[in-house]
Each structure stands twice: as C-alpha cells, then as structure tokens.
Image (cartoon, rainbow, N blue to C red; front, side):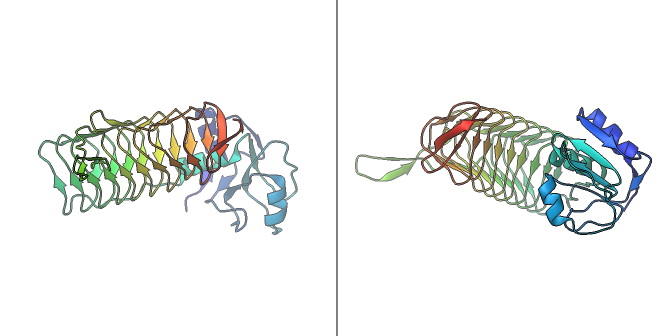
Length: 301
C-alpha cells in the first residue's frame, strides 16, 4: 500500500474546512489504515472515546496516526494524533480521499437501453440493466448490475445506483369497483432524482401516480428500502436498510430514518432522527428525536 505524508492529510482536512488539532511530526508517513482492535504498525486509525481505547488497544507497539476526540488522555503509544470534534467523520473522509478506489464496473453486456433515453458523458452502466423510455441520466453517474430504470426517470449527476435496484415501476395502488373487484390505479408520473444521490442494492422507488416521486440532492438510501409513489425526500435525507415509506410521505431535509415504517400521507420534519424499528403513524416535527411503535417524541435534536 502506498505511503502518504501526514502533512498531505492535514492539508486535505484544511481544504475540507475540518476543525482539528495535530500533535506530532507532520513529516512522518503512514502506509495504510486499520481498525484499532486489529491495528497494523505504520497505519492510521481512529477511536470514538477513551474507554474504548483502553478496552480494545492491548498492544505495546506505537500507533503511527490516530484520530481522537477532544480531551483525550494521551499515552506514550500514540506517536501522532489528529484531534477532531468528530473523529469518525474526519477519519473516513481521509480514507475516501487517499485510499478509496470506486468499484470497477464491466459496462455494456446484455443491456437494454431505449433509443429515447439520454445518457450523459461519463455514465457507467453495468451488466443486465434495463433503461426505459425518456430516461435521463446525468454525468458521472454509476449504475451497477441488474438495475431496472423504468420510463420517465430522471437521475442527476454523480449518483450511484447499486445492483438490483428498481426505479420507476408502478406502485401498489388499487381501487374497488362496484362489483367488489380490485383494479390497479394507473401511475402516470415519473421519478426525479437529484445530484450526488446513492440508492442501495435491491431498493425500490416507485413512480408517482400523477406527479413525480422526488428524491432531492445528497440523499443516501441504503439497501432493501422501499419508497412508494409520490414520496418526497428533501435534500440530505438518510434512509437506513429496510426503511419502508408508504405513498405520499414527505421527509424534510437532513432527516435520518433508521429502519422505520411510515404510514401513507404523513409529513416527517427536517433535521430529525427516527430510530430503529419505529412505526410512524402521524406527522413528526422538525429538529426532534423519535422512536417506538407507535413512534413517540423522545427529545430535541
């Protein structure tokens, strides 16, 4: 693995407007990364708190570079350290910049791409994908294998769609006629996806009934999620695995939904957190923390 000078890491963090304090020799180099529990000599690592450090780091050999929280009690094993208000964030930003190579995709085998689709420069499409009519895919977007993008879907720039995702199929809407027979409600809208969006493996996003289902910029959707017809996810929304949003749910900006289920037609506020396994049956406010079944208010965020 390549060697990187600590000074280059510090320069990058400054460019990213990260607040930090460095203690050590910035001319030292690191040769990779490792976890604290399985630390490898010469690498960089991180720790969330001092008690975890004392519990997990049983070695005597030095740590070449570690990201630490404020007010951390240093010992002689720490050679260089970067003190950050969020060492987890700072560490993984550095990993992404210096050590991460995006997955290579073998493009173009057994794909169906409609003649009316618009595929921008720099788009990479994996194997066995279907791209429907009037689809627009922005520059730099990557689409992994076995993805279906149905008609009238628009995807912005620098997005990632992981394997098995299905975007723009009809939702699960039905009506009952006078004889009691169920009939599918036609869905004639599309899906509009912003920039820098990630959509996880085997996730489904349904198209709108009349208007589009909308996914804002910088939304991150995990694997095995379901976003039903007419949902609106504002910028920066985060969905963890197995989150299920029924039709016409609106989620405000920067809200985190952690493996929840939400009833159709509700509004979930901005800058909030809804915790593991929650069942949301009513509107939720901004800047708040909720969890439970049914969901209850647990405090201000």
